[in-house]
Image (tube, rainbow, N blue to C red; front, side):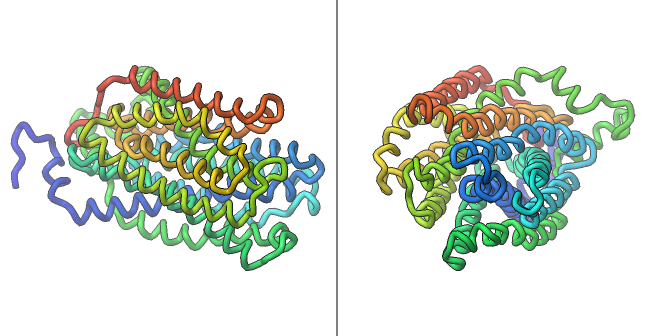
Length: 449
């Protein structure tokens, strides 16, 4: 099949190469699942284990705050990772960069599983924990944009939302795996002493096997047509890759700063809902001064909620191909605004059913917007700095919505009651809706990617 002057280079090949498209979809899904599994088991451990293992002298409340402070360190690192790996992703290619992020994440995660406790090495333990968490943040900061570019730059225009769902399913699968691994460790070991002594380490060390699988799959895929076309365009223009070109970060900040900032605002409530629903509510559900629920019930609820998240993510992505990305994202934001004010009064009833409904609905609302975001953010930026731009906007939103709410929530609850946390999430929802509306219908991604 030949291309005409109205068909951008690479478009026909992408629409016809269905085996390659399936391979890319699977590779992006498996890769993000492994990366986010490594990232999320830290959140589960921060809720269940780290206050006791690494901050025993601080007591329950202060230990939880300190534990989530180390959790938040990764969100500071994520924008740096987006810039660092975005640079290489825009210069050297999506595929090579994603292999590097997977290796970095795997090494940092296994090292956490081998880390001595505060009882063994004192203050060096939490310091090392912070450093390793920072490295996790760097890796996942470079992961999201690259994985989504793999699918978005391969997919046909009318199915971009559908195919961009595959890397977006990674967090759902990862949260289910994380909860299941901790649940299995807890059930097999049976006692808090064994679980706190060594059982919590098993999910971290076991991630090494998953990384090997992920590397094999990622190495087997090809570079995206859009990146290859951009490299060829630069060569024809007499500008070899890397020769006297502006840094991708500098170029995107100069040319599309508004898109970066508005993308960050859009993502704020998504991150807020996800990490409140996964990390903070896990701590809230098991804490003596919270819901005080059985740990195995809380972890099982996490698995159910992950399934709801996956279903909502698929529904949001597919729906966005029919009605537009912004429509779906704004709908999710409006639901988040209302649910934020309902969530904690519901949780405060203290019942198991209320907790389960709270976690499941919170993650489902997040998933509805998270599905189309995988296509929407890459569509906002030019190919030559798309990895950097999409990653920077996404991960800046992580600082505002992912790091701040879990860190502030314990103090807000202690001072003003749990409704204060709901008000904080509602404000993030307002910011997200406003930023999505301000982005309008702009897109920089052509049919060729």
